[in-house]
Structure formats: C-alpha cells, structure tokens
Length: 246
Image 1 (tube, rainbow, N blue to C red):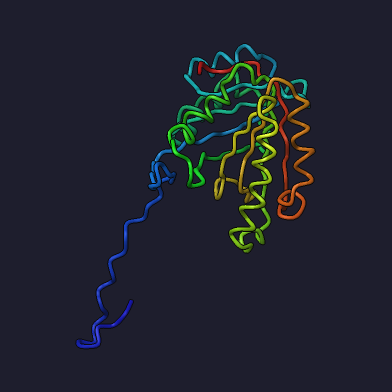
Image 2 (tube, rainbow, N blue to C red):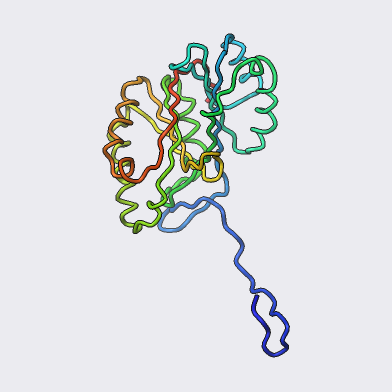
C-alpha cells in the first residue's frame, strides 16, 4: 500500500480491473470469451462382479459419460463422467459411488483423474470447443477403445520463448491431424486439481486399440515428450461397455 504524502496516511488502494477467468477465442478478427467449461472425472475400480448393475446405476443417475472394461484387470472397470458444474462430483457422483454396487468395488486411487476443458485463444466457437466436442468424442458409439492418462510437463517448459513453445505444441497438433479418422483425443487441464501435480489429462479414443497405442509410440519421438515431460501415466486402457446418450 502506498502512502499519501500530503497527509502521511496510507493512500487508498488503487482500483484494479475485475479478474477475467473466461476462456478466450477469436472470431472475425475479434476476441470472444465464454466463462463456461466442462469438468471430467475418471475413477477406476477393481473387483467389479456386476457390470450390468454398474452401468444401470450410472444411467439411473443421469450421468454423462462412459463405463470401460479394464484390459489389465479381469475384474476392473473405469468410469469417465463429465459435468459443467463440479458440484456434481461431490453430490450425485459421491452418493452413487458410496452405495451399492460401487460400494462393493475396490477403488484404485492411483488412476483418479480430474480435469477441465480449456481454450488456446484462437477457437472461433467456444461452446463447440469447451462443451460440445469433448462430450461428442466421449459418447461416440464408434469410440469403443480408450486410453486415459495424466501428464506432467517439465517446469522448464514455461521458461522457453513463446515461439519455441508454439513450435513444440504444433508438433503434437500435426500428429493428431495425421491420425484423424483413426483416433480422437480429449485434452483437459488439471492444474491444481491433481494430487500428483499433473498438468494435463489426455484421452485417446477410437474404434481400434492399435492406432491409440501407435500415437503414444510416436509421441515418444516428439520434443515435448522426449525433453519437456517429467512424467506420463499411469495409463488406463479400456473398452466401452456403456455410454450415456449423446
């Protein structure tokens, strides 16, 4: 706080502009904004002996999401649920997971993930980017296979010049473009939403598992993955057994 030199009293604090946390895009040369986003939470369980009951509970609750069979656990499942209001996760979803059949399952906290959709700043349709497209990918009946994983970016990435950062990120964009028709991706920010300090959550979705694995393999060669990631995973690999209506 500064001092009013004429009176010796502390000067009144200067007015600051209201904090703007809306997502930004660009249309027809002008900046657009939307203060809405989709939160998505992934939860994994073991010892699921009643798949039908697990799916029925999600459907009856009106959850928007998908239920997966865990490839690496014969009794394992994964649940990805989306909601615009994060209160849903500590009310409806909390209650659902606290009662049967989910109360009989064994949680796998190492696979817990929570993220939010975000914009980069050039998207011309923010509702499509933040709300509609991620749900469409998640609920697409053709996307029967999924790989979900968190990643933690090396802190030194933030010290790179902006043009170098854009070059690194464009490399991943090119990879996504080449796999169009074979795989779709959902990218979520999870800054401060993750106990392991991860930065992002990625979902790779498609009709076949091999292209999803091939993307991860090719990512190893990119500058971001090879030089600017501190951690990748753990990975959940699953096949869809239930999806809510699109």
